[in-house]
Image 1 (cartoon, rainbow, N blue to C red):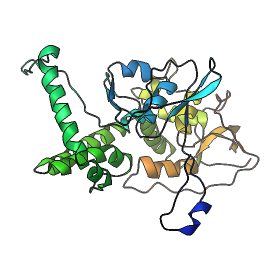
Image 2 (cartoon, rainbow, N blue to C red):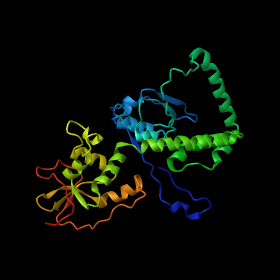
Image 3 (cartoon, rainbow, N blue to C red):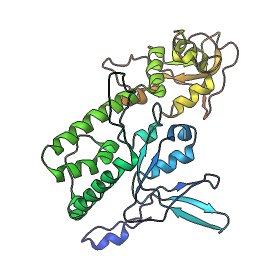
Length: 332
C-alpha cells in the first residue's frame, strides 16, 4: 500500500491510498528466496513446463516477479507471522511446448527448433565460454549504471502496447541508448516476436472453442447444452471429440467458457426438450467481438425473454432427453 501524492497540490493528502494486489503463497509451497536487493539477479528454470502446469501457486509466484514491488505473502507458522517475499527477478525459462498463457504474456518468447542434420553450431563449454560472457555482462552493467538516471526517465516510442510494451520497454531503452542500428533492430524484433506469440496464442483451446461455438450457434438465440456439445462434436476429427473418453463434456465446456464470464442458464425450450440447461448466444457476443472478431457480422436473431430461468455458477451434465437442436427459444 502506498499514498498517492500529487506534486504541487495542497489537497494531495485527500487522495485515497492505492492498494496493490498481493500474492498469497500457501505454506505447503516450498520457496527459496532472498531478501530485497537493489540489483536482483536472474533465475533459470529449464524444467518449468512440468512444474508450472497445474501448479497455480508456482505460476503466481513467477507472474508476480514480472514487476518490482509485488512481494508474495506467506504465513510462517513457526514464527507466527506473515513474511513478505521479494519476487522480482529476471528469469530465463525453457520447456517443451507452450508455456502457460499467464507466463508467456509476461515474456519475450523465442521459439526454438530441433537442429537439422545439415546445420552446425558451436558447442558451449562452461570453462571456456563462461568467463568472457561474465566479463561482457560486467561491462554492460558498468556502462548502463553510468547513465542510470537518464535511462530510468526515458519514455521511448514503443512498437507495441499493453503488457507487450511493458515487457519490451527496458530492451528498447537500452537499444536507444546504444544508438546505431540497435533502435531499429530491437523494434523489428519486438514486432516479429510479439506477432508470432499472438498468432500462437490465437490457437489456444479456449479461443478455438469460442470460434467453434459461433459456428455452432449460427442464428439460434439459444441452445441446450447437449445440443451445443453435439454440434461441436459433429466433425469426428474435431478436438472436442477427444476430451476424455466421451469427448467434451458439459462440465468441461462450462470450465472453458467461464474464463469469458459465459455460464449456462436453466431455461425452457420448445417441446419435446422443455426445461433444460443451455447457453444464450447473447452471452457470447462480447467475447466473440473481443477475442475472435470476424469480418462478417454475427448473424442477428430475435431474443425471447426468459421466464423462470436461473443462471448458475456451475454447468451440470444435461439430463436424458435434452439432446437435439433448438432453433428458437421458447417460453413454454
